[in-house]
Image (cartoon, rainbow, N blue to C red; front, side, top):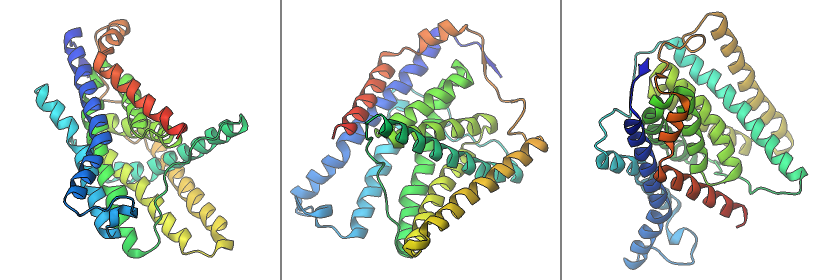
Length: 319
């Protein structure tokens, strides 16, 4: 699939992505605080009390609602500003085999990304730099499991894929598929504003972007995103229910077991010539030379968004 877009059309796409990311930063920084101020004014939120005095269930509902708005709304506002008409939920027809390859093979690649993130943390630590640990959400009961699956697996799988693959990667594809995958993955990583979590998200974003481009189906990327987050959530519950002396063995079994199964599925997909490997029939091939595409991508809005994301990430290191 080729594109004969002019530089001004490409610039408009870069401006759209930049505006969406700036709005996302504004929502991310301000929305939760504004909601807390409003609840405090209404006498519902108690300052200097854990979770504002709300019960665990009430706080979870509040967090999920604010997250859904902060993640789901900004790109739609940008779409309205730029009169964006493209569908952020493309769903080309797929096969059961592709679903299996994405869910299991993709999960194995996410496991590999986890190992790469651990290696990066160890490398920095060896150099005397201790990066802040990623936030941990503990799953301790069956009821807690379903809440965490909804908030930390299902919602991100739908909303983050809509934003970073449906909108961002989709808008950038005329610049070239490789460019679109890498930039959308970089923005996805920077969005987390936490070095280790962001590095893992970048690597995962490369996999998710590849799946999206190869299949033209956002829901397959969402499936992989959900599978990764849900597996981590279930693993946490299993480990919390396992005696301390056996946790190491159970972790190895669950983590490396899933990786081995997933890489076996990927190997089988290669042997059987799955549509997910080999020549890509959906590949975008821009007509403009790389220099003109990169010039068009230098939107001031996008550059400012990247700088702000990077600054927020650096601030996290020195908190």
